[in-house]
Image (cartoon, rainbow, N blue to C red; front, side, top):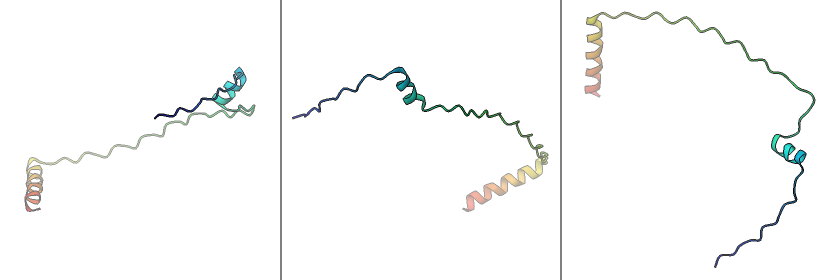
Length: 69
């Protein structure tokens, strides 16, 4: 058997009470926050150029390590 609890009705709230519950208490001391200037991006690292031979050798070395492990 399902028991249902009786719901108690809340008293009606005034508009200022609803506002204060929704947004909280507001103070007259307002602090303005200024957005920070973006930090300069670091210079990109120079790209290392690989010869075809060096790239092929590095790939073969990686394949050999994968097969051995």
